[in-house]
Image (cartoon, rainbow, N blue to C red; front, side, top):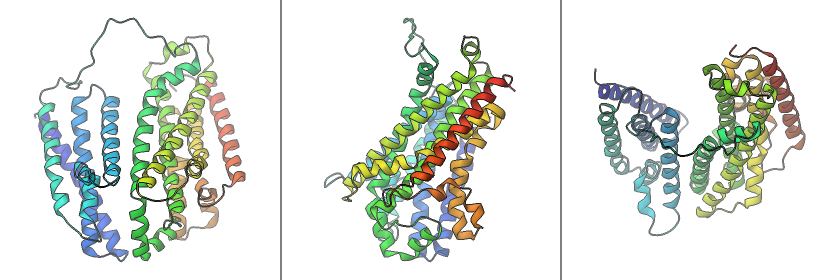
Length: 413
C-alpha cells in the first residue's frame, strides 16, 4: 500500500468526523428552534473549517521533521487565518481578506441571514489541494522523517539558559509557550472581532440567549459578559498548556532523556518546582496576551471594552488554570502515567460540570465541585477574592505534595 493511500484513508475518516460534527450542530440548532436553512449553512461552515484544518494537519505531518514541528507549523497557519479574518473587518477595502480563510468564508455565507452557500463552495478546492499535496509528499519523503529535514551545523554549542534548573525550565518552555500564546491570542482576537455579530445575533434570537443562560453562560448579550464567557473557555486552554508541560517532564523521564538531569547535584523537588513556576508564568503570559488581543478585536469590531478590565477578566481565571498545573504536578509525583488525565480534571472536568449542572438539574453539591462555579464573570462583575485565594492555596498544597512525592518515588515507575 502506498503512503498516499494511507493519507487518503485518514482524510476520509477525519472528513467524516468533521461532517458529523457539522450535522450534529445542524440537528441541535433545529431542535433549539432555529431555521433549517440557517442551521444547515452554519453546520456546513463548521464542517468546512474542520475539513480545511484536517487537510492542513495531514500536510504538515508529511512536511515537518517532527510531530512537534508539525503542530507548531499548523498552529501558526491557524493563527494567521484568524488574524486575517479579523483584519477583514478592520475597514473598507479589506473585506477581500475574508476569502482567504475558512473563517471568513463562513462569515461571507451569512448563516441565519443571507444563507449564501457560494462562499463555502469556494473553500472546497483549497481542501482538495491540501489533501493532494499531502498525498504527493507522503510518497516522496523518507520513512520516519518529513520532507523538510533538519540541517546539521558545526556551530559552537549554545549554553544560554542552561546554568540552573530554573533557566533550563525556561529553555524548555519558551518555544511551546510562544506557540500556544500566538494561537490563543489569535483565537481571542478573532472572537473579539466577531463579538458584535454574536451580540446582535443573540438580540435577534432570544431563544439562543436563553439556552446559553441555562448552560451557565449568561450575559452574552453584552460585551463584558461575552468577554467573561470567553475567558472561562481560555482558562481550559491555558490549563491544557500547563498540563502539557508536566506531561513533557514525565515523558522525558520515561524515555530516558532526563537521565543527565537526575545525575546532576540537584534534587528532583527543585527540578519540578522550577517547571511549576515557569508553567504558571506561562499561564499568566498567555492569558494577558490573549486579553490584549481580544481588546484589539473588540476595538476593530467597534465595541467598547476597556483594556484594564479586559486584562483583569483574563487574569481572574488564571487560578483555575493553575489548579490544573497543580493537579498534573500531583499526578507526576504519584501516578506519572496519568498526568494528562488527572491534570485535566479541574479545567476540562470543571468546565463541563459547571455547564451541564444547570441544564441537567444536577444536585447542588455536585455542581459545587467545579471551580468555575465560584468564578464571577469579570469584567461584568467584581472578582471573588475569597474564591481566588482558596484556589491559590489549594494549588500550592497540591504542588507541595506532588513535589515531595516526585522526589521520593522511583524513577520511571
